[in-house]
Image (cartoon, rainbow, N blue to C red; front, side, top):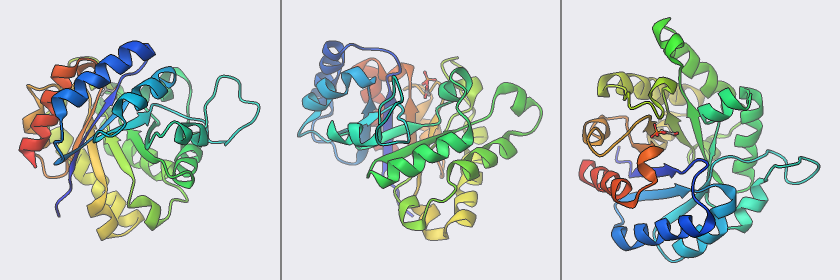
Length: 255
Ligand code: PEP
């Protein structure tokens, strides 16, 4: 089944509104009207509005890096799905390993966010992945299964069709250590099998599963050539227009 590749940039806690708008403007110029790859950039909350204005009318979509599951209320420092929608965000990264390990997010809380994202017409990019200790203990697939099943509890087949999953081995994020294409494909294929069991074969075939973890222009072509790797969630290489656009071009070439 044909799945359009998707390249998403996770800017993490980088870029002021002015810096973000400048990067977005470069991306729009370099990417032009290329339409055979879906592209999303996820700036920090403070830069969403400025980046969104710059992207307006382009094919590059706007995503957030996190959100709270409730629509409003006494949650100091948090931002909700309706607030993101009001800034024209279309995607949201949920369950990133930095949220899990540094901010104590658990699967049940991430699940509430996933449900809230769907309720508010935001496409969740649900991140799953094992730590180095878990890989070395042989529990990679078990960890990924637990995170995926718990994160998707209560999601309907209709909703799942617009889900994005990112497999991000924690040991490969920001470390320069990339998973081999065989290691990544094994987990991606496993995730697709789980999605078949949780939903249906046709839903599982539609869901795009992104790889994340030190993806760079040099290693992207081999990863993107794997049958169940449908794109990338990019950290470091998304902070500079040229490397991000090279990844977009690698995805276009791999289709
Ligand atoms: C990420 O944080 O989602 C990520 C994949 O980072 P990096 O590309 O820098 O490893």
